[in-house]
Amino acid sequence: MASQDPGIPLTHAPDGRGYKLMELPPELEALLAADDAPVITLKSTDTNALLKTPDKTYKLLQKNTSNSLILLTPHSSAPSAEDIPTSGLAAIATIHETIELVAQTEPQPISNLKNTGSKGKWHEKFGRGR
Image (cartoon, rainbow, N blue to C red):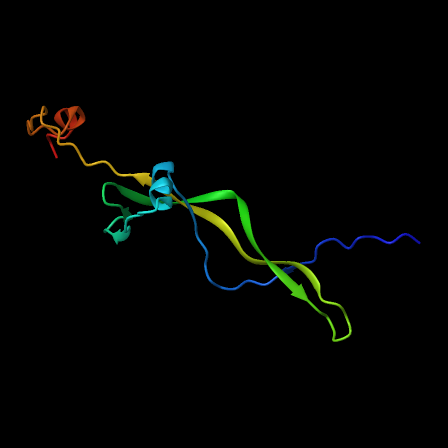
């Protein structure tokens, strides 16, 4: 009778930590990998969260993904005292979304437009009697 390789044992053992996967732009990754990496901070506004470096600000956006990512960790188990421990993997978390960093630009004032008091063509045509 031929023996079969049982493969790598996989167990489900969530650790409840709530992992998040963050995509870093290449310039931020290089900045953080440098020997003199600066301090970065997280700030919140009424509408979103911001990650600030000394010279740039990034907006954090949550993106759902169609392909889940399963985080694995080494795991060994011994079903009983006389059995030899077997090495395998444990699935500790499943991630369904990623955090994307989008560089924020400073809002530029639009100085060449004048406020004429008009609310648009539709309002001029139909909104007078309201």
